[in-house]
Structure formats: structure tokens, C-alpha cells
Image 1 (cartoon, helix red, strand yellow):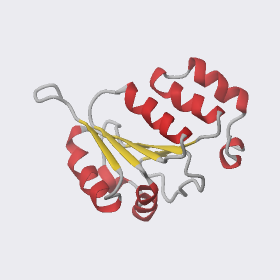
Image 2 (cartoon, one colour; image 1 turned 90 degrees about the vertical axis):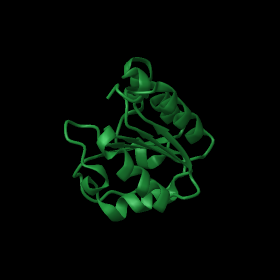
Image 3 (cartoon, rainbow, N blue to C red; image 1 turned 135 degrees about the horizontal axis):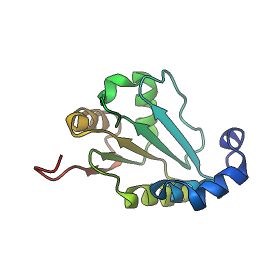
Length: 149
């Protein structure tokens, strides 16, 4: 496990989360036990540093009752995070466990992934930001079906 991440959560706790945590996050926790990192960014959390080690998954949580879109996050920090991403997924619908498992697998291969969890009304703003700041990253858009949001 990366030194930067090992200092925050005891290994035994991460191993436990890999077995019993929220099902969609279990693959990421399992990847952490093998050296990958996890960065979780909340709305209005201010400046943050992207991991130095490219083996990471970043989850940007913009899926609260009031999604703020990119404006709810530190702009320069988001630009740096997205610039480092090899893949970006924007989830504007229900949780899709395969997205998290794929990001975890990528992290184990040395590929940084960003997962943006948002609401349908902010999907376009996030897509615009990702296209501008991570133009070469693989992009996955998980959007609600018409009439289901």
C-alpha cells in the first residue's frame, strides 16, 4: 500500500472493508491492500492534493441532495486531478458496481481513475470540465435512461 495512504487507515481496517464495506467499494478497498490509493473528495472540501503515485482511484462526491457541479469543488485541485487521470467516469444515475471494479483494476495496473458521482442536472457541467481538463482520458458516462430520473 502506498505510504501516503497507509498513514490514514490501518491495513486491518481496509482489509475488513474489502470484505464488509459497501459492495460497490469493495474492489477499491481490495486494490488498496495491494498498493493502490483512494482519494475521496467532498463538495466544498477546499483544496486537495492528488496522489503522487499513479495507482489511485479518486471519487468525487457531488451526489448529495443538492449537486453543485464543478463549482462546488476547488477549481485548481480538480484541474490537477483530472489532468492526471487516465480514465474518468461520470455517474449521474444509480451506482454501477462495474465502474468501481474497473477503476480498481486499472489502479492495480498503474492507471489513475476518477469517478465523479453526481446528479443528472450536473452531468453536462462535469462532462464539459472533463473534456477540457482530461481530453485524452478514457471517458465513461453513466446516465439515467429518459424518464427514469
